[in-house]
Structure formats: C-alpha cells, structure tokens
Length: 416
Ligand code: GDP
Ligand code: IMO
Ligand code: MG
Image (tube, rainbow, N blue to C red):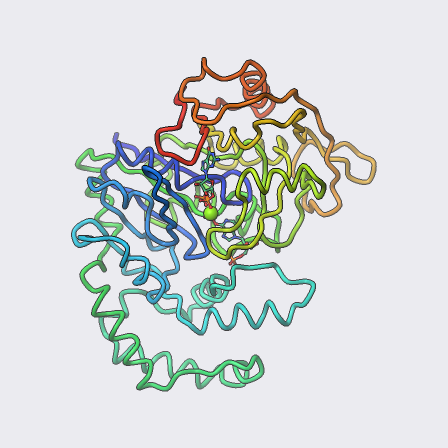
C-alpha cells in the first residue's frame, strides 16, 4: 500500500519544518498543508535567497512538486493572494480544498480585540484571526472556500451573520463592511482563487492510488496543539499527526513515515509555560546566534534548552519514526549546553508532561560544547562532543535522530 510521509513540529513551532519539507519535497510529487493558517511562518533558504511562506506549502520551491491546501486549513484569501504573487505558474500545481474555511478580515479584528481585552492574561496570538476562524467553523457559522463560487449568496449570508453579531462587534469597536463592500472584496478573491479550488480529498486519494509520493507538512508544533499542548496557551488547530488525517481526509492507515522536527534547543513565541526557558545571558545568546525573531510577527522568540520530557511526549503522540534535529550550529561556541531531563513540580520530580506545566522548574543535565558544526554535511565530520550530544538525546528521548541540520541552506543537512 502506498503511504504518505508526514512532517510535524515537536516543540512550540518554528523548529525548522519549512527547511526539511523543502528538502524532502525534492523527492515527492505532492506537498500538502493540513492545518493552521497564516499564523505559520516557514522559512526556506535556497542559494542564499530567503522565502517566508505562511499558507503556501513548502513544496512550492520545487517546480516538480504539486501543492495542496487541505480542508483543515483556515485560509485568508487576501493574505494568500499576496503570498501567491511571489510565484509564477501556480496553475496546475496548486490545489485548494473547497472545504477549507475562510478567514476573513473580521476574524483578525476579533482576535486582536479579544487579546486587548485579556490584558496581562493574553495568549500572545499572532493576531491573524486564527482562533475566531476556527471558533466559527466549530460553531457552524463559518464559511468555506467553496462558497466563494457564489459570492452573491456568500455576501448575503455574511451580512446576515453581522446583523446577529452587531452588538458584540460594536462592543469590541469593530466596524463591519456593507453588503456592497463585501461583494466587491469577495468577487476579487473569487476571480483569483477560482482556478485552484477543488475537492482535494478526492485528488489526494487518486494520487495515493496511482502510487505517487505525498508529503504532508505540519504547521505550529505539538506543544501548541489545541488538545495536547499547554492549553490555553495554544493555537486553535490540531497540530499533531492526527490532524493530518482530519485536515486532508486521510485515514490513519494512509500515514507512513513520520518525521518529527525539533531544534537542538527550544523556543516559544507568545505567552504560556516554558520550563526550560533561559532568561539570562545564554537565552539572549541563543536568540542572537539563532536569529530567533518570528517569521510572521517579527517578535523576539523566548529561548531556552532542549526539553527531553516534552520531546518524549511529542514523539509518542505523533508516532515519530525519526527526529530531524535542527539548528545544531546555533549551539556552536557554547562551553556548556544544558538539557532539561525532568521537571521539579512542588518538590516532586516529574518526568512526563503534566496537566499544567505552569510553575514546573527544569532539572538539567549538562553537556560539553564544541567549536563549530556550521555547514557540516556528514555525521562523521561533526566534533566528538556534538556526536555525544546527539547520541545522548537519542537515548534519552528514545527515538532515532535521522536528520541533522547545520545551517538554513537546503544542502547543509546530514542524513544518517
Ligand atoms: P518553521 O516554522 O518550523 O518552518 O521554522 P521557521 O522558518 O519559523 O524558523 C526556523 C528558522 O531557522 C528559519 O529562519 C530557518 O531558515 C532557520 N534554520 C533552519 N534550519 C537551520 C539550521 O540548521 N541552522 C540555522 N542556523 N538556521 C536554520
Ligand atoms: P510555525 O508553523 C510558533 C503561537 C502564537 C501564540 C499561539 C496562538 O511557523 O511553526 P494563534 O495566532 O495561532 O492563535 O496564536 O500560537 N503560534 C506559533 N508559534 N510558530 C508558529 O507556526 C505558530 N503559530 C502560532 O505565537 O503563542
Ligand atoms: Mg515558523
């Protein structure tokens, strides 16, 4: 049976999924996004040129790979159209699910207003409207991409929805467009997106049945998963392997190899618990050396050390076959490297991810650093202390590290 390959983030997002999906896309016919929206920021560097992708699958830089945006995605037409402008000849190699949900400008306004109202309890969302778009989907008042094919009716439905929600929108200081304004905006989206809208479930089934190779690209990371992350400091979608089935119309039996992406240290953007965060000089150094500033919002990322406990949780929940360890070179020059091996919660040693990570203190093991790994492409060429670090992580996490990345460039990748 032909099975699809899957790439998922194992930490709090920004692990380097884009680089690995682009790398693996060289050997795949289709690359598919299954969840999230333009909160994602996947950076790919090819021959020194940098691309920042948000909704577009990272297969787009490989002219041979075709790209699918699945039903699990929330799609902002205005943002996606801007993103499409970077690429030529997308027709015939980009397919958007008619069942994906539309993320419209009012979703972003609601997201920002709710964050403002939460004050110091804010989640620190990207402000893109992801939560409100998924809320509407689950509340069964959302609109799907397929509805763009009849903009007259869609405009009427949205205006009707505004008439019910007006008091709430007024309280949040949100102006809603008139039917005419909506019609003009939605017609523009339809004119551009129509050639790409299709039944992607049917498409992916036929691609699989023909024996062609398919790669699924996760967004965000396991610890941001709506069910299994650090709730409520999470995103609003299913970011783990299971989300790939939901977000494309696949069965669990369709999933083949699962590659989990993890940085050699850890970062998080936005609020919420992060036990191995380093608020001192080392954290700042990781941020500088790793250029840890958000691809989507430009926010400085919180930085800290590799968390074995969270990784074990992520490996189990995603069914990871091999880990791809990213940004090893960012640890170059550190004399000592810390790894969180357990948590101290109220004086008790905890070696699993508990109900609430708030207040969990890291218990560290220290490793000896190395001078340089930057650009290394063969495992044998790594410094011995870097090899020791990788092999210890493998042992502690209980999963093979099959890929190691040593720079943002596509080719600076060790395949073991
Ligand atoms: P994603 O959201 O998981 O796709 O990750 P992002 O693109 O948001 O963040 C990862 C960042 O690290 C990007 O700027 C990549 O170009 C960069 N990157 C990926 N792999 C490596 C690596 O091995 N070394 C270094 N120094 N940078 C890397
Ligand atoms: P990629 O795919 C890192 C975080 C936000 C915030 C929380 C909720 O690039 O790894 P949202 O706007 O989704 O409602 O915000 O989730 N977040 C991400 N952090 N990488 C991402 O995507 C993220 N997408 C959302 O910072 O803490
Ligand atoms: Mg990112």
